[in-house]
View: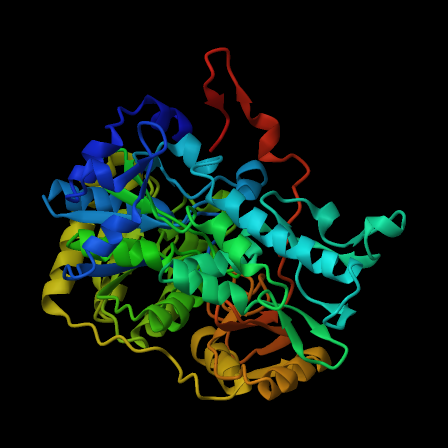
Length: 556
């Protein structure tokens, strides 16, 4: 069986000008990065501004398991299936980061015969967007430390600096460091740390900014520290904004590539500050909607994280209104949620399936709260039996969800035709009444509790003393009307990754709360969330090399 990268490297790619032509994009509207990648020009986006919007379809999933769900693979396969039906469609995906590519998993390129290509480029440097974000982040850090060195005119309390440096690579040794060691001219000694680049607030800002001017304004609002008097210090106070914007002026332009079947793919931006939003940028989504009749996008991890943030943060801020949601599951993952060990998932087990399907049930209920019609799809494995597939289909149809099998890993777009037809039928017969889950005018605690109880199924919420103090401070500073970006493990609906299925009535603990003022949300952290992950004992990087022809081997 061929690996994903072998399939991708053997593919015949069309020149990016030809792919662009499918969306009526002229060659002059492209800023080329070789033969198969391009950025879309500002002029194009200005010109298509008055075009009608296409239909917006979100792909999400049940909670991730070691058995796999295949959300990105389904997204790509669905886009390819729309192409086979002669529909003007585009997929919109996030960019993967280097850390996971070299660490514990592959990137966000899909799999099998439903991939975006050039897969190798995408999983490595791509068009340099992440490097620009890293540079802008670290420029702000450098200017902050220089301000301290040059006399600290603003009265910054070194014990209340909240801005961290970043790097697009997993490296646990950088989580907690000391900077400024050495002589007097080597800076002010203080504790510092790194986050992975996708955890930088600048990533969230890039993803949420409407245009370059909006980006600049958001950068200016970033809180880097607090004064001895308790007042916040922003990037604007440090006069860093202009230079940061200059570093990001190309990175804000969406990237155009293709799938294995030459469906246009706009790939741009990454997760919201490593808090599992996992969607592409607002600019990419809005551009896609003006270029195509159907836009298929994706939100990361399970629907309790990615889809909730997509609905409550991205759509609210950007004025987007999704027309349908595709909820991805696998029989294997549902059986895993029902208590079956990973090495026994290939055996038919209706009893375990009936126990584990409650996870899918909860996600269906959650998505209905946003008023958007749902299509459930099973990403099919060869070990799935007819009895198991029928059981899930009946379960979904009883809950007023259209259902379709997806065989896109094996068959590409052909394997997604049934799903594409189900989505089209849903769009034609069911109206979307999208609305966010909560009103931002509620207090910080009320918004957190709404998400915890309505989406996760928690019975109560408790707050650490530090979280309570932070909420009081943010309320006093006037940040309490922002939406909430919850940070929670992705493996369970609860804050305990071992609680599979559908836990309920549990207590969830908020241990930390802080504001991302530039991005425009408040982050509430539950459990242990890594903003600078480490590498495993045997990183994927050990198996990656370049052969004598220059071909990368082992990237997946």
